[in-house]
Image (cartoon, rainbow, N blue to C red; front, side):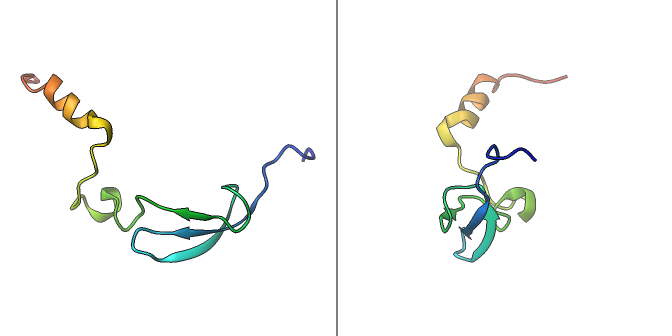
Length: 74
């Protein structure tokens, strides 16, 4: 491997949405940093079966629905 071209790989703390914490190794931030997750496997519809709804950040879904509300696919 080439020297001095790779990011620093260190231990960080990850905090999930339900408050559970675990330590892992990452290139995120600095050693000892904390990464707070907004979406994780306990809350994301891909893992929960879609019982919860995602936030419409920036109104993208609303704009899409308004743009194509009269469209009937064939």
